[in-house]
Image (cartoon, rainbow, N blue to C red; front, side):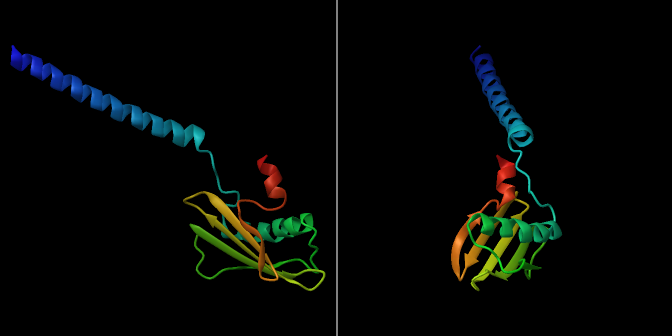
Length: 137
């Protein structure tokens, strides 16, 4: 009789562990499909390059920093589809150098932007620039 009781306890423990694993898998699926809806705003390197020119210009204008001409943007060496990289340069109306660094991380599903004005950061690792920030609200 003791062997039968022991077998029942082992079965109950095994069923409990299986139930916990099943609940964990279900919770992960629910999180991945319903809760974690973060997406890259710009899916390709070309989209990131084209948008950075306008959004960084808008960000600078909103901070009272007018540009003398539109920013000039280029692909950074070493960019990939998974790790997009863009660099922009320009000059303000009062002849200060502007540098913009933009990146997109496919795995993290995030963008990062930094703007340097005369070598000093005025935006550091922001997730959006200009009108893109308004779209998130």
